[in-house]
Length: 457
Image (cartoon, rainbow, N blue to C red; front, side, top):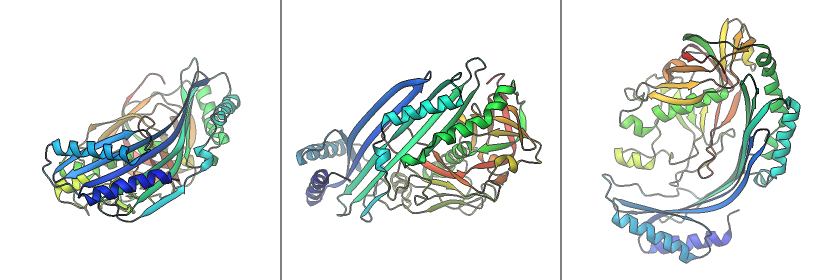
């Protein structure tokens, strides 16, 4: 739980600032993180950190200034100094062309339903032992690499707008392993995520990679010629597509600036297939649930696309102020995107039975946006991709590139899984801000454009 002394100090300085008529927000971020990396079948990095950051933002008319302090918050004087720096920056700042919307904690909230002490204090020896067990089970003749990030995060938010407090505590982990053949150079991978230590199971990784090993060992690989194909996307690939579609098409700023692929559409108009529904749902347990944003607004389920129709756009506070809109609770580094499931069978291979030749691409890599306004994305298959014929895995496929539009891929979904899956999208290089999406475990799209294929894995 939040240190009682730190809470008291922040409340004291907040009350002093409010008494002086200062408009400010105080955001405390505490993380306890551990990262293990694997290279050449052994531990190459084993590091931990326990960091406390305090962000203070001051608004003075149309001017704003911010200051971040990294270190122990041991006295009110420390916080007063950070506040003074933010005030000075606001005084010297260039006025904005719009009036910023004041930060305000709408309701007092304290949430820790996704906190697990066993994961927060996970012994690195447990991670090393799990990797060793996987190497032994799958075969030590292969080369292995991977990473495993885990930890806990606390957020505490106060503003001078009122006396409400917002507190969040949670744990998260992202495990990955890559198996590489030393001569043939093909690679297989598997990931696991969750907020409990018990969410991880070495047997799951061994089982998933073992399913693909025979095909990779016994086939030289298949080169996909450019053209249009039926593609079976796995959950990680689908999550990548949905996340980028939302980022480039469903954010208020892109839409207002006419840079998004939805710029010519209005709420109520069709933009995707009728079997596609997407929402931001911080109450979905397959995401890392976060009930408020960094400006203090309560986050609720927020429909974005319903049966293919554009329903709403996400507005952060700055964009909302600039264009005269209402903020939608999206000043957050931890969105909770959820795509509705469909009616397909649980087994993806059963879903493509009778469809002839199908490309099974579980994940996309090196994803980019050649045309934001047209909603065109590109990405490569790299790991685990196989050729499927009539529901049977035939052979692995060489690295294959998709370059297509969101509207085509998400507009021609023939089958959508009835099961959902959590996909972790967290960045391990910044402050700990866990992100996860809930998407169907697979989706089959027809007429997907393959633009290039390598001559090897």
